[in-house]
Image 1: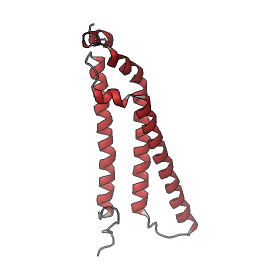
Image 2: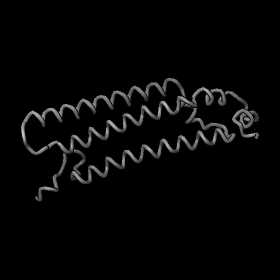
Image 3: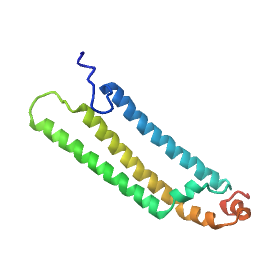
Length: 147
C-alpha cells in the first residue's frame, strides 16, 4: 500500500476522497441556504411563503438549529485544539490525525453555517409569520408585490 493512499475508518475513504466529501458537504449546505434565500426573495416578490419556510422560521426551529450548530462548532473547535495541543507537545513528529482533523474542521464550519443560517432567517421571521396568517388575496399587497 502506498503511503498517500491511507484508508480511513471514516466511510472507508482515502484521505483525499474524504477531503472532497467534506467539501461537498459544505457546498451542499450552502446550496440549501441559497434555496432558502431564493424562497425569501419569492416572498418579497409577492408570493405566499411555502409551508416549509414558515416552519423553518418558527422560533423553536430557529433557536433549536442555532443551538445544535453552536454545540457542533464548539465541540469541533475543542477537538481541533486538543489535536493541536497533542501534536505540539509530542515534539517534532509528523501529524497523523489528518482524518480526524478534516472531520472536525468540516463539522466546525457546518456548525457555524447553521448558526448563520438561523440568524439570517431570524431577520425575516416576523414578516413570514405575519404573511402566513393573511388570506391569499392580501399576501401580494403586504409583501410588496403590488408596486
